[in-house]
Image 1 (spheres, rainbow, N blue to C red):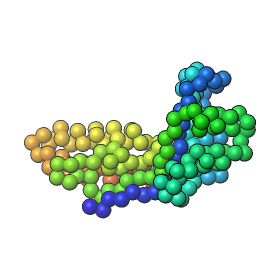
Image 2 (spheres, rainbow, N blue to C red; image 1 turned 180 degrees about the vertical axis):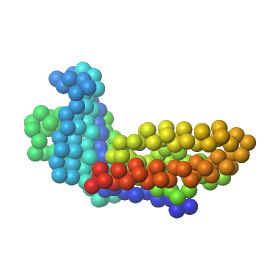
Image 3 (cartoon, one colour; image 1 turned 60 degrees about the horizontal axis):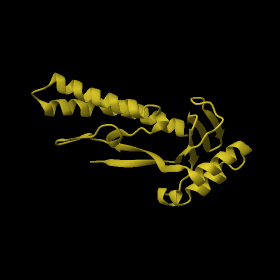
Length: 179
């Protein structure tokens, strides 16, 4: 099968910090720059999250090794409030990092193995449809099984033919948003 991962050259770093803060829960702050974005997400009065995207072509292992320095330097020109929050998240928070990319597969069915959601067509958060597309794929598959309960192979073939154009649309949206 012709399955591959397409690296969009975007490094994602998210952090969570247990801390009483002055931000209003549910009111997000966004900071946009060339090749970077930072979001401050107050989850409750005592917990805050950060999400950042930076354009980086290095491999994920290298980026993860330098993640805290990258976070600090990428947003070093931002105001003191942002700088202090970044420092606290780096020193006391929990961090998650990864590269943003998409899985491409010309065949979502192989025998009794069916690829759904991120395993078959991860459109990334940049598509705006990550979780929704996974649910949609499961619904499409279940409808074809419902229509062909005695011919599962036909149901799987129908799923395999119906999903690629939909997947391509949302992966194309993600590429456009990444650019």
